[in-house]
Each structure stands twice: as structure tokens, then as C-alpha cells.
Length: 277
Image 1 (cartoon, one colour):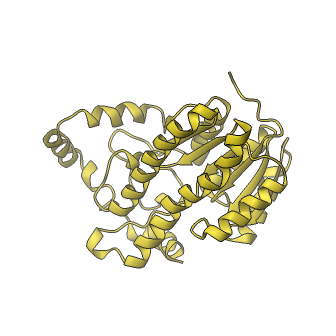
Image 2 (cartoon, rainbow, N blue to C red; image 1 turned 180 degrees about the vertical axis):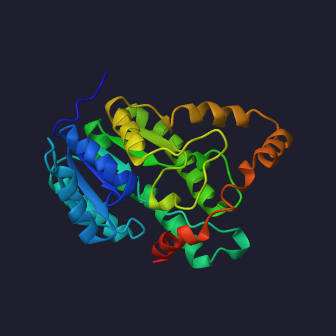
Image 3 (cartoon, rainbow, N blue to C red; image 1 turned 90 degrees about the horizontal axis):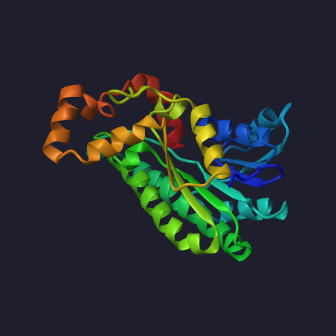
């Protein structure tokens, strides 16, 4: 069964840029009503105008700090005033890259607060109403790095592993009520977040629009896990079946073990600065 998204109320965090912005545009184009959340109120408002122009649905933007429970609760409360929330897309996330011993404690805390606590908080805020209605969908944007850890991104990888595990548990908790929980696992996406990062061997960067298409596709026809691009799932699960010594050898041979160590720091400077703020 495919869900008609016309007039459905969709809430998306981190939707002022990148994947979130592309996803908002796709939902609006499908006729949904979209509430865009972003840490920067001006960015959120401009994003809403951009995605709604000439499209079927409507959008509006509001400020939200997903790491602040009160801020997230106020954002969800406003969205709920427009009607029952049909879909929550927990998309907000940051990716500071550093070997662990050089990773500032404040940056570690911020990464975990946004990438993990924000997902848990948002889900906890929306599911009671969804359970009561026996309808609704929480879609969490994780990463392929949430299935395969890489040196140089230990904290980011840990946060995305947590999102995958959390979503899997919520999938089991919510299924008896007819409520869905799904996780999206993109590889390297051509956004500011991945600036200066090379793709893993055998994989090409995907676009925000490809990830957005996957998210909307899952909203229409729920399933637990979706990789973007789809062929990455075969690579990921195939590697997981290779013994550790073999995986280590493949990483050394292909250079895949260093893709998040040997990054272009100059190209990432602006993003890393904004992520710290």
C-alpha cells in the first residue's frame, strides 16, 4: 500500500540546507504541508519560501535547536497546532572530523547532543500522538558510517550507530500500533557537511536530491532501512561478512581505511567552524 502524501503534515529538522532542504521540496511537491526546522530562523524562513514557490503543497520555517529539549518541544508544539503530525524526519546532524585524541570535548558533546539526543527527543515528542491515532512515521537520517566505522570519525560514527540501533528498537516498539520507524543510510553526500571528503572505493557521491527521493519513497511505502545509493547496501553487508583481518587488508589495499583521515581540511574549514558554533 502506498501512502498519498497530499495534505499530510511533515516536520523536518535541519531543513534549511542540504538533504533537509531537498527533502522539504520533495514533500511539498507531493502536496504535503511541511514545517521546516533549522537552528537559524532566517535560513528556515528563506528555505520555506524557496521550496514552496510554484509547488503543490505549502511550507513554513521555524527555528529549532534539536539539542535543546525545550526548543524542540516548542517546535513540535507549534507544528501540532497545524494538525496531527504524520511524518517526522529527524535530519539535523553535524559531522566534525578528527582523530579522537584531538577531538575537543565540547565538539564531542555537541555531536552527541544533536545527532543522538536530538533524534531521541524528537521521536519521544511525537510518538504518543501517533500511537493514540495508530498512524504516523518517524524517519531518522543516519549514515552508512552508522554501519561501518571509519578512523577519523569515531564520534560521528558512534552517533550514527546509535541512531541505527535506536531506530531498530523503535521499529519494534511502534509496529504493534501501526506506527513506523525507518532509518536512512546515505554514503558521502555532496553537501557542505561532506566537503573535503572523498568517497569510499567503489562508491560515487550521492546528491541531496537522491537522499530526499529515498526519504519520500519510504514515507510513501514504509520499510525499516534504506541505503543511498541502493547498491551501497550490498557493499556494506558484503563487507560485514568478511572476517576482520580481511576487511583490514581491503581497507589498506584500497585506501578506504583513510577516507575520513585524509580529508581536505582547507575545504572543510568553513563547515567545521559553523559546526563548532
